[in-house]
Length: 126
Image 1 (cartoon, helix red, strand yellow):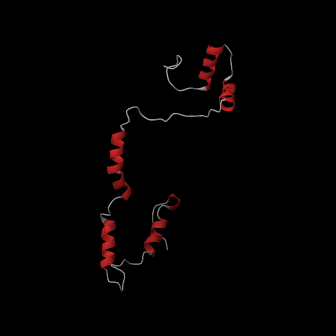
Image 2 (cartoon, rainbow, N blue to C red):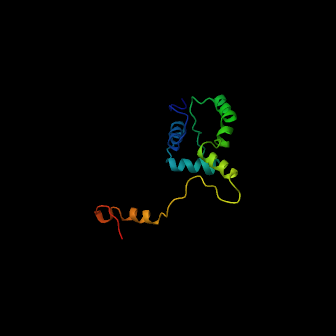
Image 3 (cartoon, rainbow, N blue to C red):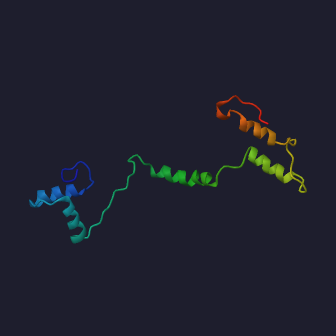
């Protein structure tokens, strides 16, 4: 408890109250800032916000052990890795064919575009 205040955070209002208590002279908080800054050369300092439960040793352990693994990123697994491997193993003279060639997709696309236009039932357009 500093000068009767619950917390150690000093605001301009608190400094003005302490000046009044010690000297009997009342200053506006804005003028207190002028006194502190210009006459005494003080600067604004804000306290760091850290949890009181903060465990510095646990944080250091995490940074040393876990962070490098997270920063490296995940190993490539699954479909992306498989596609890359197949691409490397494929015949260099042609593109790899993993599926049978499809029919021309133009007709199917126009049918999908016509479905549900203007609130009508889906149907084929000519």
